[in-house]
Amino acid sequence: MRRSTLLENLNQQFEDDPEYVVEGILLHVAEAICAEMERQKLSRSELAKRMGVRRQYITQFLNTPTNTTLLTIARFAKALNVDFATLLSGAVEGTQRVPSARTMPALEWWLPATPQGLASERTAGSGADQNLSKAA
Image: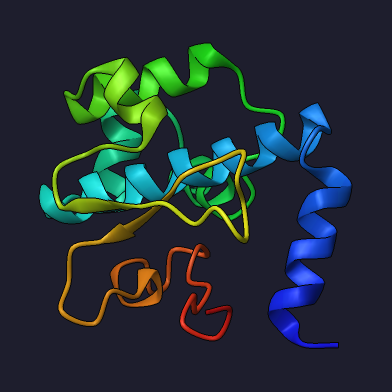
């Protein structure tokens, strides 16, 4: 079975599952946070200081943003000085919207606005460094 067919089948199987949709959204939020941190040239330590948390908390969130509350996302937005809705949607400066109806119709994917177009280059070392070119 081709990889894209497998992804399409899995997506069809889970596209109506609320947990699946929420996990995808949270991954986009983590990507948006990474993009904004890069845009501001902001380290995890500095972001942690702004939020009044330890650097490990930032790292843990960026690696596995599961069970996240809206309050947590709002705290990240405040610390990054970005609009909450913008951060939640993933539409931060330095990213471009790339819809992928075949692989995730319930969500819209956000990739960095780089010549290479790879999230892995923007988020290297953040734990969110999946090489999206392999999935294409």
